[in-house]
Image: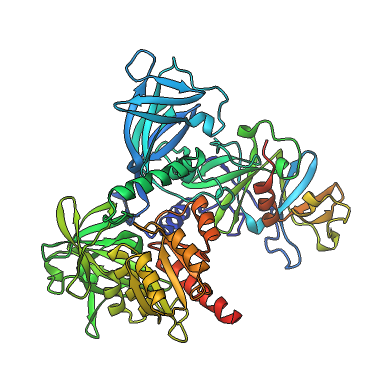
Amino acid sequence: MTNVSGRGVGMDVVRTNIEQIGGAIGLESKAGAGTTFSIKIPLTLAIVAALIVEASGQRFAVPQISVLELVRASSSSEHRIEHIDQTPVLRLRDRLLPLLHLGNLLQLTDETVSTDMDSFIVVTQVGAHTFGIVVDEVFDTEEIVVKPVAPLLRDLAVFSGNTILSDGSVVMILDPNGLATEIGAARVNQEAAAQGRDQNRDKSVGDLVSLLVFDAGDGIRKAAPLSLEARLEEMATADIETADGRLLAQYRNSLMPLTPIYPELDLHARARRPIVVFNDGPRWAGLIVDEIIDIVEQPLTAEIRGAMPGVLGAVIIDGQSTELIDTAHYLTRLHSDWFSAGATKAPSNNSILVVDDSPFFRHLLSPLLQQAGYAVTAVESAERALDLKASGAEFDLIVSDIEMPGMDGFSFTEAIKASSEWGHIPLIALSGNQTEGRMERGRDSGFIDYVGKTDREALLVSLSNTLEAAGGRS
Amino acid sequence: MSGGLQMAMPTGDIVAPVTRQSFVTATIAGQRIGIPISEVQDVLNKQTIHRIPLSPPAIVGALNLRGRIVTAIDLRQCLGLAPLEAVDSAMSIVIEHENELYSLLVDAIGDVETPPAHLFERPPATLSASWRAMCSGVFRLESALLLTLETAGLLTAAGETPSR
């Protein structure tokens, strides 16, 4: 076999592809009886329900999570597209909905939206801003696997990825965030958000977080932030062995320590158990649960602080109170150096100030940063942070949320940068939505870096880089 | 599986000496080019290419190769030539670069060639900058000059083609 030979490609391609996504393929042949193929594929977290639409003869996928409703517009029905100086709008119940024509936006056609033609409007919500996407045709919904776009196309903000449909064709996945930016809605959006903030000042601004909802075996619904999980697996309990007082299983050619979240779980009551598998470099760790219930996306406001170790607090999911699990607690129990191995240990106990209005994120970040060797002070608002400044506190670095009630992250940074006491302290922004425009705004106001809220690794790397740079200068 | 054209190694000695590299050759606007065989994944005949709106013009779309998404690139436009006309019926060479697959559309596919190393030369200094960025060298073959392409430079060029 050489690298140009054509033989043996078939099954090898299948195997490589399946292994690439963490699955396995088994083949069993019996002479005269046939062959059994068993394909095991992990439940990928990147599967989303999407609405397939068509504009100017080309199909696109719209993530269903951002679709509010579908409206059919035609000149004869009550919904018809009207224009204010070329700008299409739609009267929808008691509101005027701004529209964007997908074909025009993507430069697929130069024709302006014709009012006589039947078209479909996908009513989409991004943050507080609602707009309609005009498309020619709406097909079915499909469960799609989101694949990242090639690096050459990363600059196209209107697409969040691409996918292969069941008929084999490649379609681009529209990113409503990017579309909104494209039509300049980002600005409107911010204004609207600011208005909303004034109206309910004491409500925490909700960042949408994906949560894995499961039952650990004690009958209490539990949830864990999904962005921290590697994958969901199912394992035969017979394969889980006890050694050195720990539960171990062979996984991907290495030994993976496991722990049940509910300590009294009768592991062998079932032949197979779902396992939430975490990965950090070459190391794996698994949490054994009783049943995976759902994956939900909702704003997190864990108002009640957890009393037990391993519990961050309680949240309401689907009308039921749910325990929010601190996965870090379990992972550090399995690998004592889980969060610190990748990032360089902070040499001299650098002190960090964390500013975030959401108690959930404060509770999530503080232990993480402490594990990595930093001294952490967490406050719930920019105003509180400024109080600390007034009282003469000193920090090596500030990590601040952007969306906060009262003074937001941008104004906070500007205030810090203008002050004589804290003007030299580097700031890192934390945010739920990282769009290009916001990052620019963040840099303008004085943030050194911009990190996604749930991206622990990026935060640790950014922290150590920033501190190193600051140390090098002084 | 799909319409993948399978390449056969020239019969005879399979193990090439270390100093000799094999190239998949192709023709673009009369110019013979070669891509190191170690970077080539597949050679495809015509494929359904799904366009990507707003992309740089040299990126003509995406195609599905056995469940993987491949970005199709018009080599002519990378080299500053007029766009390929029959995009959907063009043959292409699939290369892998940093775990991503790209299919390079060409006018015609040639043989796999293993030119002797002493025929190799650096690209001439007078070659235009856009070509030199993509070209790693030239083989003075008897029949024609064979230009060897450098994938990284080529992909950078594809992303930077000016919009129409």
